[in-house]
Image (cartoon, rainbow, N blue to C red; front, side, top):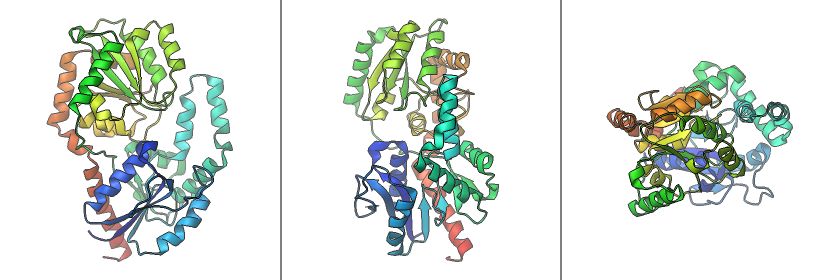
Length: 395
């Protein structure tokens, strides 16, 4: 297929997180297939020949949906686009591709991540006091319920279920195309070796201690389940295992509450808060198991990067990335981050060299690296674009 494609995103800045990085990687992969791709963002640091920031003078970091639409429409009219592919709920797009899952589900699951019942209830009741969030939810609800609305691309079965549950979206409007990541990133062996030495030194370990290193990567430690993970670690270390388990937490989140929790449970010497790491593939190469007991993730990039690196994964059923591997074969899927005993058992399971080796071997044998590739996502989207154009009579 050839033609012009407009991709609409909120912020063109890969430093902001996985969703932004995923959209820009996808645009690059689509361009490699011969499509002429223009990315339109409300704000951002990138403003190039193919990435257009349409609200550069916005007084705030985030602009309203209405303001973005007003600035966006004349830019789209400057050129004919065969496909308009939007990450935001604009009903004039051909495709709506919610990278963060539905707004309705994200509010519920964010509230669920607070362990205190009163706080949890308060967060649910006040979730839409924010005018911008309320506007996004309203726009998404109207788009998803409109039988003549755009095709909706869900990152996972989890997101598809959200669309049906919260908005009664017709199944024929939903296309599930699992998320993907670049799988060609190289490991810097010098940096990786230095990182391994740093980790062992901080944990007061030697290679001869033969530790199992669990890698947790997130910035929102609460939403991604670090609290339950520390509690599960406290159970796991009391059970006999072949190798001692240690947790390496990577990310820019505040650590104070989690350090105190670890100290209260007596496992402060089992956890290293490493802070941000520039290249996750280096960290994955020197650790053993990826763990993310998240409360909400449409399809977490970190888990896909771990699979691409051949590492077993422990995550929850609230992570759509679990679609891309098989429970007990390539990793473990816990039903909820609040199921501390099951999470602890998963840690104990992967405290065994044989279990790690078996899962890693299965990931290689089943070629999961190819399955989680952004190239596969681009191929699926090109097919979808073609089907949309056929229905419109443009081909």
